[in-house]
Figure 1: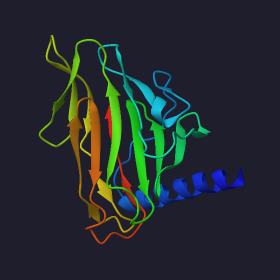
Figure 2 (figure 1 turned 180 degrees about the horizontal axis):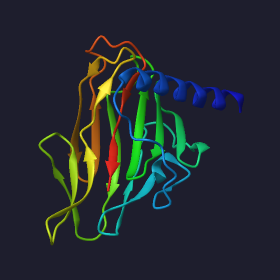
Figure 3 (figure 1 turned 90 degrees about the vertical axis):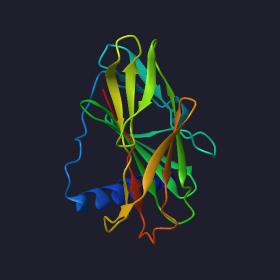
Figure 4 (figure 1 turned 120 degrees about the vertical axis):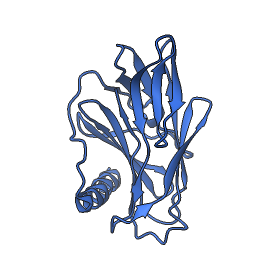
Amino acid sequence: MRHARDEVTAAIEAATGVLAISGRSEPPEYENPDVSWGELASEGVWAPTRDGQRIHIGVAGTSEDRAATIVRPSLRVFAGLETDTDVMGQTTAAGVRFVTVLNGPDAPEEFRFPVRLGDGLSLDTTPSGGYDVVHERYGATVGRFYAPWGCDSLYRTIPAEYRLEGTTIVMTVRHRDADALYPVIADPHYVR
């Protein structure tokens, strides 16, 4: 058990160290009762939309499904979800973040977040590279996946972008060609 706890501590310290350097305003952690997390990474999270529905966002790894280590009700860590990769699930006042921590050059460059949408909802690309969750009947945006960003431990920008495969958002973080100083952090972020 000590090994798992060490992995969680290392993931939190890596993410905190990089995010502290950024100097940008990060969304604060918040114990949001409208957000429900599953126990396993594949079970992901149910998050609210502005029209009162909920969407499901999974966290897919290529290795075995990982149970979350719950640090606080608003923070959980999926340690070792991929090779050299940890994912921190964070609840915010308006949604959820998936702080993806790439610990070395062997970490993959693609990460999958399967999305299940409520009735009459669809994903539309935004000009910034994110996705709006749109109510098809009214054309109203009821949720948003902000465009991903990536940075290394010196807060140098690492190219990151999304593409859609069906209803799975695939985040690509091009850390191997960026001469990155690890850890590299990437941040899928959903808000209602």
